[in-house]
Length: 264
Length: 264
Image (cartoon, rainbow over all chains, first blue to last red; front, top):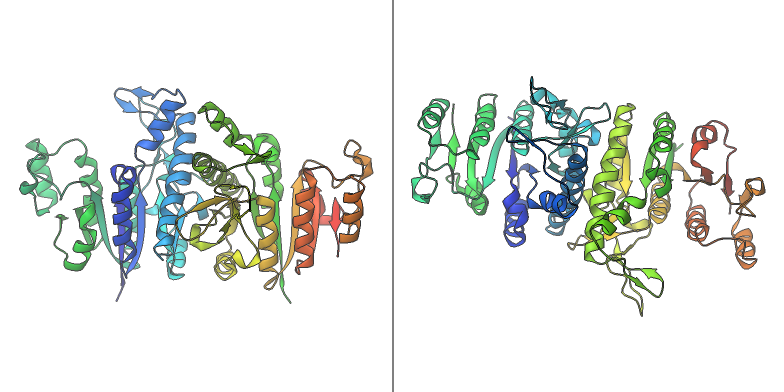
C-alpha cells in the first residue's frame, strides 16, 4: 500500500498576514503524514518593485515577467518568503527545507510560448517536469519540502511559475509513489455559488459541474485557474483534491469534511 | 579511507563579476570529488538597501544587522544570488542544490553576544552548529550543496553569518567523515608580504608565522579574519587549507601548487 502524502498550497494573502500564517503553520506542522508545502507570492514582490520605481509591464491585460521582475520575485519568493516560512516551521519542530525548482533540478520548466505575447520569464510545467526520484529520496530523509514558485530550464534561466500549477503537477508526479491528497488553501470556505455568501458552499465539483458553473458565469476570475489545476490533478491519479479555508486545515485533516471536494 | 571533499568559499567581488563568476563556476563544476560551495554577498545587498533609502547602521565602526537589513540580505543572498549560482551550475551539469542554514536545520547559530554592542541579527557558529548527519546524506545523493551565509537559531530567527566562518566550521564538522580540503578563493594570488606586489606571495603560513606577520602589521584588515578562520580549520582536523586566486581553481586542483597554504 502507498503511504499517504499531503501536498498543500497556500497563497499570497496568507503569506501577508503574519498572525494567520503562524496559525496555519502550526496546523501544518502537526500533520503526521508526509507533506509538502507550496507557497505563492503575496504583496511583498509588488511592494518592493513599487519602492524601486519599477513599473509593472502588462500586455493585453496580462502581466509580463521581464528580467527585473524575475530578479525581484526570485529574491522575494525563493529568499525572503521561503526562508522565513522554513524558519517558522523549524521553530515548530517541523524539519522544513526550502527549494526552488532549480535546486537539485527539482522542477524543470519550459519558457511559455505564445503566438503573440512574449510573457518573458514565465515557465510552464507538466507532471514530467518534477524530479520525483530526488524528491522522494528527500522525503524519505524525513524532510518537509517547502517550494517557492520559481522554476528553471537547466539552460541558465530561472522562471516565475504559477504556484497552483506547481502544486498540481507535483501531486500528479508523486501519485505513482504516494497516495496524494492535494489541498488548495485560501481565504474562502471553498467554492461558493455566490462569492459573497459563505453559506453557498458547493461541496463537490466534477468536471461536468465545472463546465456548467463556468457557462453560468458562476466562477469568478480568481477561482477558475485554481479549479483547472485541481481538475488536472484529479484526472491524473491524484487520490483526493480539496479547496479549503486556510484556518480549516487541522479540522479538514482530522475529519475530511471541510471545503469543496474536486471529483472525477 | 575517507573520501576527498572540497569546501570552497567565494566572495562578493566574484559574485559581482558575471564573466569571472561564470569562468569560476565552469572550473568548480569540473571537480570530480565531492564538493560544497559557500558564497558571500557582494554589492547587491548594499545597492538594494541604498535604492530603498535604507541607511547602514554602524556602531563603533561595526556594521549592525537590524531587521530591515536582515530582510534584504535574506532576499539577496538566499534568494537572488543563491538561486542564480545554483542555476548556472545546473546549466553546467553540476547537480547544485541551494541552502541557507535554516533549511533542514543545516546550520544552527547563536545570536552574537557582546557586552556593549547589540549587533542585531548576526549569528555565531562553531563546528557543532553544522548538521553533518543530514549534510552527509545529501552529499551521498550526489547533490552539490551551495550555501548562502544565512543561518538560524530554530527559535524563529534568521541570522547574517560570516561566509568565511561558515566554510571553516563546515570543513571542521565534515572532517570526521571526509578528507576535507578547504579553499578560500579571492582576488589575490594568496597572502602577500606586500599587498601591492603579487610577486610577494607567502607560500605557507603556520600559526606562528601568522602571529609574527600580525605583529609586524603585514596583514591588512580584510585578510585577518580569513586567516583566523583558515587557522581554525587546520587546527581542527581539516586536512588541507589554501587561500588561492579565483581563476586558479582548476590549476590548483590539478597540481596543488597555487596560493598560500595554511599549516599547523
